[in-house]
Length: 496
Image (cartoon, rainbow, N blue to C red; front, side):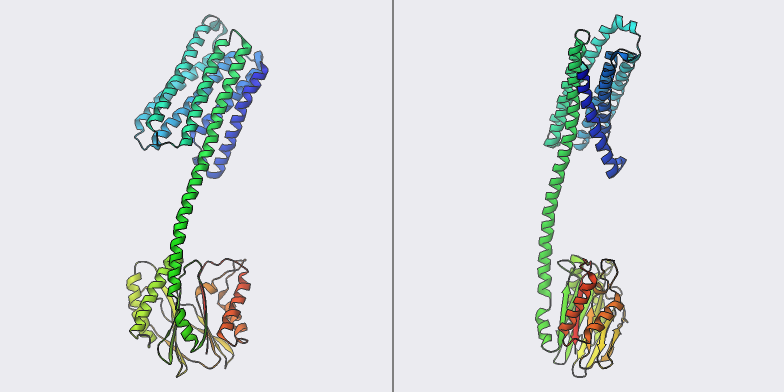
């Protein structure tokens, strides 16, 4: 007899432990909002089944008869089972997006009367006089058996009716989970009814059926959790599959945008300019497409135009601004506006602002017009970071500073260009802000002073623009120490 109580109580203890562990996991992961009522019902049921095993081990040393304690605890377990089924019923109704207020009200009254009756039975089982049981115990147990059977039949009928009505709204794994819970619970109720019937005839048989009923109830509720895990894993797998499909489509679109942007890079004009003047470019977008803009033009036999800019934002959005800027610049080139940088930028700014207004987007742009006949450099910086110029004659580095507003914010601003005389061997380094804002492992930025030091160490030994770009890249990579950068980086060197 004792072994049967150990057997049944152990299953209840295992049930309670696994659900308490799951409860703690949910509390740590998402707090109290993640804890649902069904979890608490099953924990209470597991605790009551464990207590039933403990009560059986204590035997007749208890204050009241063992079988009365058993019946009281079983009524409590049955109550948790009914509460769990009702929770599922309401959840399935909600899942179907149907009106559930009336059903909730009906369920509340149903549970109220059920809990009143079950609670009264438990109290009566524990506290009623022994003499009363001698006279009316058999009748009361008969009524209790009938109540158990009637409750089980009604719950089963309503459950299967709900499954038929809501078919298609419940996943197959959830349908299996609910059916396993119901069938296991109903089997437990049948075994407990048999245990009651054997109660005064053969105690050994009574304990066996009681323990088997506890096992079936524990297994049913354990499988409820197992199938929930499986359903969660299946949902996550489906979500990952859909996310992978979306990512694939996005990457395909980005690759198409990348191909378009590469086709728009001025590679042919760059080769043509390199035949006239010593220049080199390093273009490194953060993503497949970027917002750093550069372009080169041969305006005449003596005039060369170089532009380097940065559109606000990153990725595809910045690349769209990049493409729009390129179209506007090329239109101005065709209109022969860039012979005067100040006038060209005023026109460019009006056109860009008309497009970008109310978008909180903007462009910084640095432009250099090289006049080979007069050996003058006309430069204009519209909100761009200070650029570096090495004067070989003076053997020092100068800053070509910003004196104009950014492009794309104010329509009617005036721009001003500056003029600088260049000598053979002078070197101009143009770069985007992603270069000086790059960080190393310690999250230190390159900064303009450090970049200036790098430039000074490179230009004194450089004989070509390619040497300048190569040396700067080596210094920058040594500083970055392999750290992934979060902005586009563009370098352009011109050696006069």
